[in-house]
Length: 394
Ligand SMILES: [Zn+2]
Image: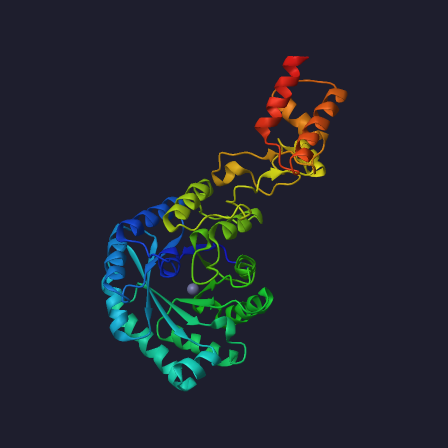
């Protein structure tokens, strides 16, 4: 069921950019594009060329800049004028990809489009056929059925809608969880049913949003029911709570034995730069890239960390900081939750050997300082001072 090769398609420059308080300038878009190329993603959606002149120029510039063999997608609504305009921008890429989006959920059809299901099918057929007529036989066309995740009530129609897109010339079927409303397995089962229905007639892609914080879980599980492409964004940027996070998805798949082309060591520097460029800070507890995720403060954890620090699999570590390009290391910090192990570990790290009794005295000293000062954390530097003072004094 699982595909041979999982493709990571980045949509930061389109879905991410359109949700920024201050969308990127052309120069900034070029910088993000280069970061994505260095990260070695499998494909890049560069923009929404028909939406405005800035987007058009940026999409065209990035299409021209694209390396050989990297699919460069431009998003378009399902009408001929916009599809033609999109093609004008992305045709310069070595491997352009036309991406057409149209709603498929019952809710959208009744309350937003206000047309019949037959008209929806006709609109999809017409727009995808038109795209095929202008891009020629070899260019990929991706069709997204907006609000696929909502299309539970009209699932049978939704299958017909995607089939119409394939018959009209689409090669990739993108299944978006445009708004995350249900539990992951509801969406995963819909993707599985769609994959079983489509078979080899087109590739299946998923595009999930993180409204309930489950976008990574949802997308990762979709791989195991046959999704061949996952659409993601740097730093989880995107509308509302964002798109599926590239880093989390890639690391989760890697940890589960999947082979990806991602240059994992580029993750941390990329994340830091994107945080600067967007003025959206990285939370301390953010998986993969947060400042605090390699700190250990409780006694039991510190003991486990100290005993397994040199092993590939750490007692309390999924992956090492260096694997994602961080130059920090696992840190043992001292609070009133910490144990003797913290002191011993720091001494060992500096090649100082002292008796258990001495370790106990240093431990009591550090604990007293912490307790006297509102249970604050004693930093590694302070502990080192404490230890050096002690060692010098003795
Ligand atoms: Zn989206």
